[in-house]
Length: 172
Image 1 (cartoon, rainbow, N blue to C red):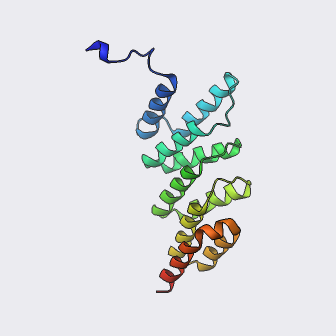
Image 2 (cartoon, rainbow, N blue to C red):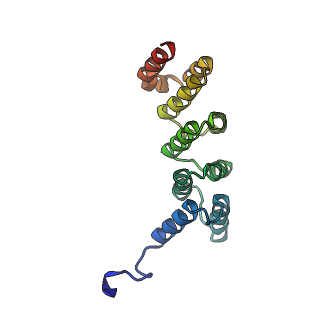
Image 3 (tube, one colour):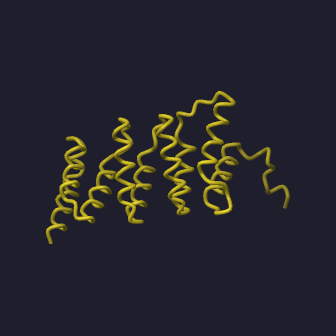
């Protein structure tokens, strides 16, 4: 039976790191995600490793969102923005959607505003849809229209069907 199980030397280091991050971020007895985040940053500095690759940080944020540790996810998200790391669009959308579902619409709007104000292009039509739906849910149609207009022409073309449906639903 021992021959079927790989030894620790046969397991790739990235898989060990991924398992450790998943365990830390999804268990309530694990450290806060910002402790893990700062540890990753410090390790990167110690070995002179480029921290512009967002995959590890995206995995950490995603794990925190799945575990319902939204404050930790927000802390990590803000941390990667401060370091100029580009978060992946699906991770941004997942975090914003979860915040909206938890009625943390103001926090979601603030995160989006922070991303846009930094000039980071980590949003797409899906991101704008999430926030527009949240604005309509709160009865803030003007703000929803403003988000649509700020999206730019290419984003408007992708979102036009959604916007029409949203407007019809809001008037009924």
